[in-house]
Length: 116
Image 1 (cartoon, rainbow, N blue to C red):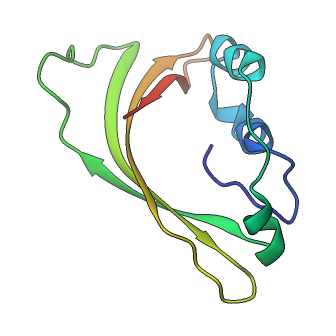
Image 2: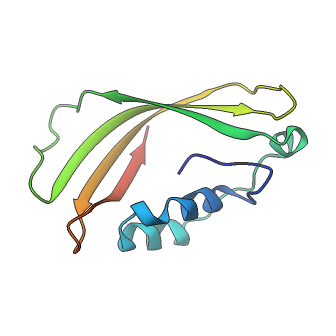
C-alpha cells in the first residue's frame, strides 16, 4: 500500500491497486473513493520509489482481542524515498493500525488501516 514508484505510478492509488488482492472488497472500494495526491515532482526527477520498512509493535491497550474472524495489528512504518540515481529523501515515520477480517473464502483480508 505504501510502495509508490515514480517510474510507474501516477499517484498513491496505483500502490493501493497493487495491494488489491489483500484488501476486503469494502476497504478497496473506500480507498478508490478517497482523493489522492500525485507522486511528488522531486520523486519523478530522481525516478524514486518508496523503500518501506515495517516493524511489528505491541497492540495498544483497549484494542479488542483477536477472534476467529477479526484480528488487529500495529506496525511502525518508515518510508524512505529512494532515487534510482542514488538520491535519498527524508524518511517519513508513521504507525499503522491494521484490522484484518476473514473473507468468505476463509482467507484473511485487510479491512481497515489508519495511521498516526
